[in-house]
Length: 331
Ligand SMILES: [Zn+2]
Image 1: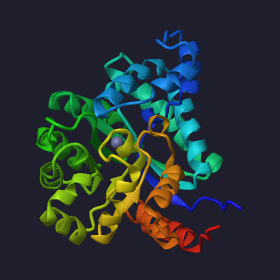
Image 2: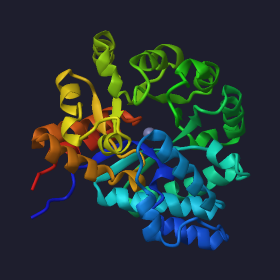
Image 3: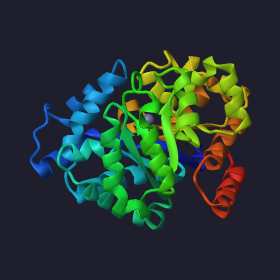
């Protein structure tokens, strides 16, 4: 008999990447947006990629269906409902304001809609939440600064900033000023680094952007000194196994470096990234690595505990979630 999924936090999740084809069609219909696909089925077939860029192309195309506060609220509610069923108790959710403001959707519409869904998430789904605003690294530093400025009226809704989209050629140093500003505003800092980009990008994210958590960080393994530093400073890495396979950062899940990362003593967490596109939500990723890498129950428990250790939670909350992980019984 299947047991309930182990309690976990999701720390690397792009809300725009939870847009399932069926919801995309529903929102397109509601907003009179024409899609290039005849049906949700046909769109689902298009969800196959060869690398980060081919994924990003479709990802940005489909954002056209997100227009109103209701759309963003519906998107977030659909995710939270799925996440709850996957054992997620706490979610720190990324969103990409520039992908919307560039289409004429005001940042207040984006944050207002997401906040509406997040406000009753604990009551409705039993999932505590936080929002992390990401800058698109293939856009200019000036655009990131403008975005942070535009978000100022909503800072009570945002706990931190992140950095995502096409990594290679867009090193962390480009965003030094905006991260300094975010720190001055009291925001937490994370960044994608070392997914397709080299380990130097991880080092830069730590040294120049002051990040407290690294998203992906797989390529850190190429630099033993960096690994030693990440271990010593307990810097969490939010790893996304199914995403790594779909975007070809790793050829096969069986070859995923997760066991090596754990053996090195890194504080690794397992997350879903863009689950509508990459074939699975949080617990699907747990199950996939268990099966492909032969992880035992205690390793899975450790990964779940890491997700709460790495989360931006107060001590009482963290303790209570860790107790739930410790008490979990595997089926
Ligand atoms: Zn990501």
